[in-house]
Length: 562
Image (cartoon, rainbow, N blue to C red; front, side):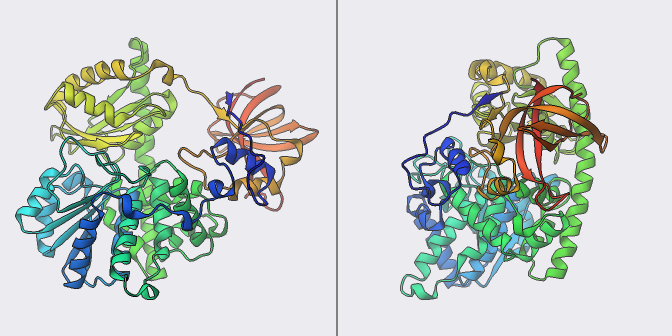
């Protein structure tokens, strides 16, 4: 357990922000109220995005000529919200012939593939707009171009050595792009393109410009769900989207998902998006068809939205059962690896019975437990001989670059791959798995600093005695948004354990004493770790929604004997 370096927050303009929040924001790099709570007025302008003019030309012409635009989504939450943002936004800006499509993970694989292009023929598209993918879809884009369709790629993933043959590409992470923030999610890139299109279409009459802020609820959900860094630009987008949702002005689909997840709209946080809304949207793409998720996000009727949200809730419950079984099997496999000798720097797991839509979650769970990058593979289809894999990484190690290094050292070994620093995906022939494992460890030994494999809990230090109250708990809840690269506040301290009891078989409820008062705490998943005497814990301070009123609780993240 280590404490975050504190920064001086005196002498800056913090407005009336409480001292505790000033300290936390300063420790995360903010130098005043403008940095700590960025507003939409301070958003970076779209101008720096490479390829933006060509992309706007395509959309402006298609809108003016009433051509059929098909927005092609992706089967994760970022891709679904980006698709809904694109469809809603283009219609707001005057495009009257807009449809959408999304690949089925089991049928088409990732992104705009030749198979998906074949299935799109029935729609008779004239312009395809990819969202959250496309930068690596060379074959699919070529197939679309052969049919005479135009293709506009919007993406945020890293490009390979060559760009695909699209008519226009907007991706802040493509070579040569000068946009200052490389952290936009796919939905953020689509939103920026809509801003630029609006500026072009309404240059002569700004007063008639449609209000695109109605899309910010979707932008917030996709940005948080994709775990992109919450730099100042993304924090402004997420904060604005959360304000819409809290004011009960979100789209019908998101409002229904908030309801079915049992969350309170008025106090919704980025954490609620990450743990309650995003998994329900993602579940459709993992086990079923993301078309259900996109339909929910596009739905205008509250009653129908509730029906679709209930369906997503049920799919998510099924996903949780599949995931639990796969994680248990993965943990047994890891235990076997440990017994056989030293744990690989990057464990690479495979089971012929696993579901390809859930391997990313398995990799994520094992990454958290082992604190090292993890890859997990499953068959595309039983007996197909083709595997689909997902990689998850730890802070400081770029997993997509690891795959690129394997590909460079062993050309032809991998199929398609792509992603970013913390997450990546790839395809692989099952027969090639032993060679891939060997090549993976070879490159990991070269690129991975062993010091990164030691887990460390980073805290914001201790709370003062008068800060363990509902007022400060609400300051912390509402003072964000917190998230990737702008972490939620975590404190540490020593406490006397008064009583403990197990709840729900896996969780530990604790009564703690400190500062002359008794405090309630809960350690989710901590029932197997006895607690007595004095303990040192890392915790979040939250309002206790179960007891209500002025009650607070400490949510324990880590504990050890004092």
